[in-house]
Image (cartoon, rainbow over all chains, first blue to last red; front, side):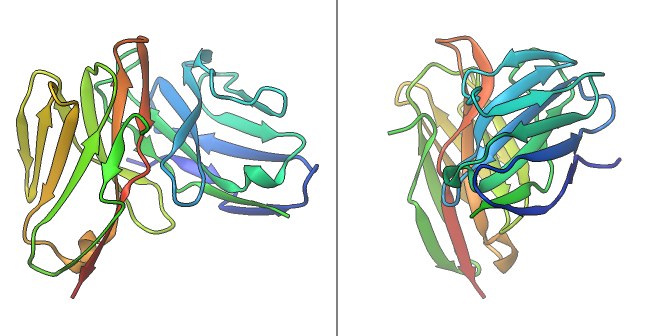
Length: 116
Length: 113
């Protein structure tokens, strides 16, 4: 089966500019996650969707980050305006079961963002 | 330390040797998972161990879990150069009911051929 797709793979922008990332999860997966991974650190959850509803966005900097999953399938994560500290890899993941933690998450290749 | 903190931060071994990395966490958990990340790529799920399990095997991987000490270990036996990667443990949080996973900062394993 096809894996989690993300685009673009790389993005370089200047601070205060806007950027958007796209994710298409594995078909049939109800839960979609966006993570931020800063160099040398583990992934940090930004937002979790179950179908098209938000389950957890407690760590999303809502003044500049937004995300949507309108039809419960693909998702977009936006940063506006970007700051230098937003330089990171943005990972999208999906899992089949909704509402439980004992299920495997499948990760996409990530988008590497550099903010200059 | 953070929830899901790995130790050591970096490990270098020769091919054929065993590699052991540890993870400590702070809260009550339903399960603990280990993931591998090759350089510049996404994470790959390796193994999940539930809170009522003490040991689990998968191929060359052996995971242990000690909920009384809030710690886990991942053993990779007969390592190969292809095992070179970063390894992360991830946990949920029963105390807060948060089902999303919290990842540690990882152990970077280098296997010398």
